[in-house]
Image (cartoon, rainbow, N blue to C red):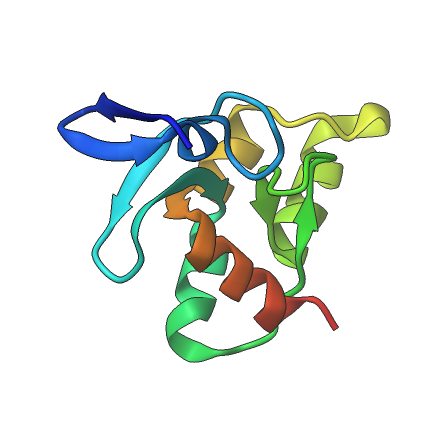
Length: 112
């Protein structure tokens, strides 16, 4: 596999294109190293520490943006009939970055 340099890391083209075949941003995780960048609500990040099951909703991509059941209720309440995200629901979710491996772990904890 061809190797390239990106942000000072030696990685493969598979790393750049991710496991899903699309260009992806990378993040350096202290536990898992260089990984695909993902986005989740602050409550899901907390569930990594507590192992508490709080629900898991995500957009259509395999590692799409994710949020908990409480954020889902706020999104629907704030978004009206369309249920769209707005300033208040986004502020409540307070989206954080996780590495792909941490995302997979938080999904495993919260998908029942």
